Image 1 (tube, rainbow, N blue to C red):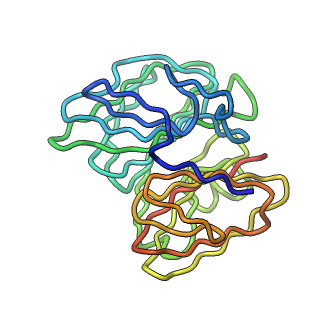
Image 2: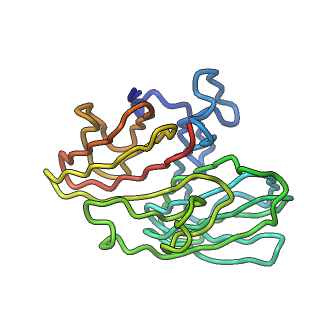
Image 3: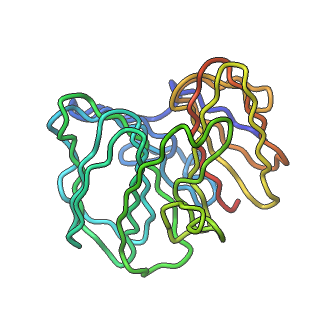
Amino acid sequence: MIDIRPFKSLGGADFGWLKAKHHFSFGHYMDPSRMGWGKLRVWNDDEIAPGTGFDPHPHRDMEIITYVREGAITHRDSLGHEGRTKAGDVQIMSAGTGVTHSEYNREEETTRIFQIWIIPDVGGAKPNWGAKSFPKAGRDARFEVLAGGRPGDAAAGALPINADAAVMAATLAPGQELRFRLPEGRAAYLVPAKGSVTVNGAALNRRDGAAIRDEDEIVLVAEEEAEIVMVEVSA
């Protein structure tokens, strides 16, 4: 099963400083058929104007992964963590027992991010934050795990999260093919950050979403230079 969700079909909000598209129900956007995909609860496609951002606000019991596509985001939280995550880099925040944080665009250009929320396996974990650079050269025609909680993910260099899930990315040149085995009982959701591809023969354009389950293998073929972000979770 592959459910293609065109970008134009997504819910959204425009606050002037923030232009957001929601792959799943979020905020004022509610669609009972799009409440999540397995443990994946939120995938927001955010554009944040220069000099603006999310004021301090709390979270708990959620794994929050930020994939920076353009610009940079500056994080600060109640645990004393502070850092700037730029395009191509990833940050994670395990909210656990509770944390208050802010996310600002301190740049002179628009910052564009994917914000991904995954439900943790166990509530009440110790809060955590981290960020890491992942050069795109390391994911040529293969998925590199950026954040994960599956066995072996942390040892392979992924940022740790408290969920049996993985956030990964790949780059493809025009005409390149990538094959990914989807284990039984697993589901995936993928979005091209750039370019367009086919997914098991179905067309997927930039910023469209593809919800996938009950497929033994995912076959991606790039129609043009493409950058793909995918989350694998328990179905």
